[in-house]
Picture 1 (tube, helix red, strand yellow):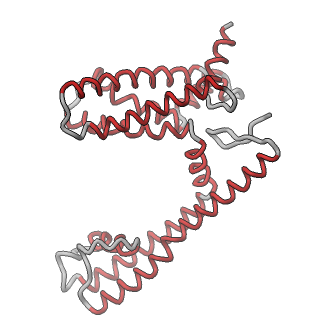
Picture 2 (tube, one colour; picture 1 turned 120 degrees about the vertical axis):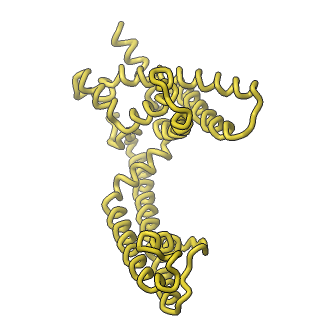
Picture 3 (spheres, one colour; picture 1 turned 90 degrees about the vertical axis):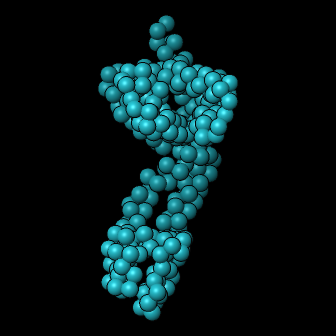
Amino acid sequence: MYQKIKQTIFQLIEPSKGNLTSKIFDVIIISLIILNIILVIAETFDVSDTARAVMNGVEVVSVIVFTIEYLLRVWTADMLYPQYRAVKARLKYIFSFMALIDLIAILPFYLPLIIPIDLRVLRILRVIRLLRIFKINRYTHAFGLIAQVFRNKAAQLISSMFVVGLLIIIASVLMYNIESTVQPDAFSNALETMWWAVATLTTVGYGDVYPITAAGKILATIIAFLGIGMVAVPTGIITAGFTEIINKEKEDEKEDIHYCPHCGHKLDK
């Protein structure tokens, strides 16, 4: 009986194709997450005491639901990781990325009840509730797809970002040596100059800091052109990753193969 109840709860809280109850549960949780994000934004406005009380009520209900969900997921972790014993499975789940997000999503509510916290710290903790949006990753295929792309292309992305970072450092040092004598306030050191390098390399160009010497303008032109190509490299890698996964999923659909939304591994039929 105990195992049957546990199995039923696990099937309810885990995204499952063809399970109507599980889909309803997913819709409820996603709706609560979206509502909480809206409330975080609404709190930045000057609202009436009645509206503030309603928002606090929704926050309490949301935290209760998220807490129950978190505890149920910890309880059924041995079904998510059947290859481990119950204690080890629960520890593995507790320290997983999604479980940490779940925990961080509810901690700002409980911490002030446990320890006295300065109001400024409390405001920061309440902003952390925005991390609840990452909980949607568990219920939507789109977020899982993005995570899988970044995992698959991690090495290429790190390499490209390393090259971009190296270019920013080189541009900062060169521009500092060129412009610091004529604009000591704007280009006071290499780190200050790095703001200009990032804005130029990403082709944002805020215009708050810019070179005035001929050599500086030439360097800025070169960096701007390099930026067009270098910033496009990670974009191309990510695009290729999406294309590969989408094509693979189309092939797997023909073979009726499904993937776990958490780890991306193939599921047994």
